[in-house]
Length: 115
Image 1 (cartoon, rainbow, N blue to C red):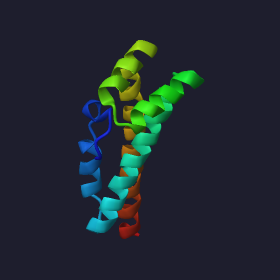
Image 2 (image 1 turned 30 degrees about the vertical axis):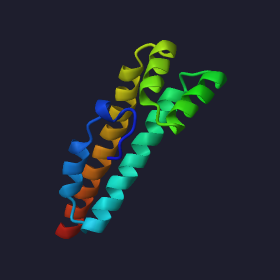
Image 3 (image 1 turned 180 degrees about the vertical axis):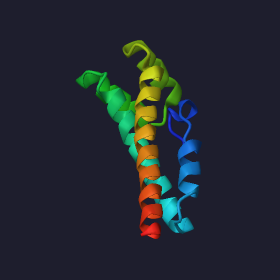
Image 4 (image 1 turned 120 degrees about the vertical axis):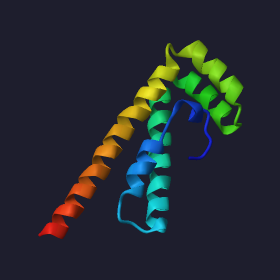
């Protein structure tokens, strides 16, 4: 996982373990892992931005673009109640959905081998 301002809040090892169980090449697993990172990033940005007004969004994006994590967290904690919990929830919701998709993929692959 790339390092983002929220990386310390999120665990994706469970998804990595699920991916490892798929019968895929290393390249395919790497591609899927990258897609997971991107989807999590977009989900978290959406969760944060939905809590901010237009001017606050601009300031947040400026801090994000300049990789000013300390200023970004100070700003978010001043503007949004329980922002860390909201980020964790957004990430966990998406992770659960992805985990279900991976398990369904495994189930379908096993089913196709049986038939």
